[in-house]
Length: 225
Image (cartoon, rainbow, N blue to C red; front, top):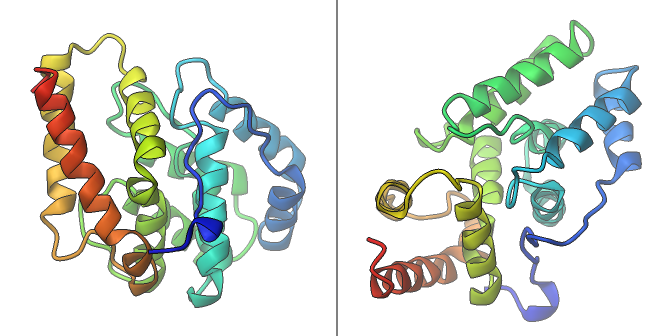
């Protein structure tokens, strides 16, 4: 596990977080070309939609901080970073198809600009954040670990983020939400390792499993599952 001085904080539900315009525009112009400011404004507006509680600018910034810790270990860090900017850009409830629509948004805004291989890779990286199939490449492993890294946060931050996720489904009753959510989380825990990369496994694996066990016990004690 990382030391407290190195710990990356969570999504921070309720806190005003400003996305880094300069950072995004530099990446977009480097790999895609013109139009960075317009695309950034669109992403910023999407991540600030009022129904969001967890999948907000704070989640993007959390992911980017995790990315920065591991970027030098990736095969193509620009592709991973671009995918992180877009991976939750479309977030509707019900959530079915959000990743596909987010990937399609990237493809539409990129158009035919930049390298086709790069655009295709970003599309695949966004899709792998559905967490339905094991990642097939190193960079897919990194984006999966980054997207789920909040599971390995200190308990208070993890619990705050878990509550924020629940708040994104206000019309779904507890007896429907929690069994479905538990099934998804248990599918993550059932994997040979919660984290696919050694880097994040060393940092988050044990704490993530402890948090999940503690969360399930808390929910059961409250009679919600």
